[in-house]
Length: 338
Length: 240
Image (cartoon, rainbow over all chains, first blue to last red):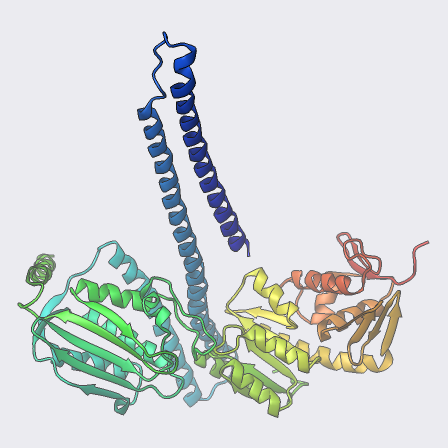
């Protein structure tokens, strides 16, 4: 409530300031033109012996330029401020979401520990409770890791571990791991097409990409998740199309979902968990691989398809890909030395 | 283990976090309660349409319909249903909103199991106390106000409104001790049946709501007065 009020006042102040600048500009022009007329028409008649220069054009034009620059600067300042306010808002949401994501598994772990401490629990139940605690502690670990990794990614403290792989072979392996991790029945995931080319990827980072996409497909499917993975390639690039039959996405949100802290809130969404970091992380990883990611969806309840395009080794982005491999080799040497 | 006098009471647990829900269901069932589990707001309303419950434990961040909306809908139909909100949100605004929408109690995650069980039993005890004491005092008049403790309908002058069970219980407790000073600690222990060390702000929120309903000017109360450093006192006799 307070934030929307302060935004209203900022907009009001901005409009007022712009009117003031324009008013001043108008007055200035009026002053110049009227003075010029007086000098030209009356000045000559009244005192022809005095040589008076008409008002200085340089000062006049210079003044206008200065005022216009202030108005433009003011506009940029205002635009920046609103972006900052939006970011602060998103950040507040992020804190609320992270709090929820941290506290929920923590409450669950605490509940099971107190249950085991205060009650006599049958051995099979005990085993079940320990598994639940493991699940929750893994969830906590993942969340903490993701926050730390993203922060490292942003500070360019990336640990390079790029190697050359056969594209469809590595993707097949990684998606299998995601399926196992999220306990999806293997029949729910279909892989079509092939990308018979070499690529340079960081296996662990690409696993994070597929894990995040799989997690999203599960979270945003009202029924049992169904994933189809389509691989293809052209002369320079190879593509992964990761599609689900979930609740879909409105066109206005296609770009938004990759923004940091951004979460789409809607009553149709069957899951409220998340921090708004997952797809931002995915986009950053793909960017580091020299590729790009986009999303397509026909709309609500029409499913979602993420399209990832990556360079083929020694065909596209040669210099950049080589630098990734060089950096990896350098890191490995350093590790061996230590 | 202490015997549970409310064994067999039916509880609707609304929680979307699977592991937490399973743990809660186990513990509540172990105490002798019959528990139904709803994973989202829509499912909770479906359960409520086809079953009768003694209490609802409600998470706030739920898919489809959040806890606030569920509480509001429940309160509009089932006036005396005790609702315990269970949530990771700790902001005072959320707490106030939850209580305003009709929640009777608010517990933040992570919580202690014993505290949760005590609160659940306390709420069921209050429900029972309210039911029995209503038989003795069903309609009460003070000033321009008339309170029906059976159906919770009230009038204040020409204004008509309905109290939540908790508001009614608090008012009833104060009325029964007319002219005496009742401390926040006593109210928490006897009306809320929770330890006074936990919080006292909840009481203030409820008192301020009662004043808005019944006082001619809620900023200078006539009936429900604050006694500095002591608590509250109800008096309906006009000052001379």
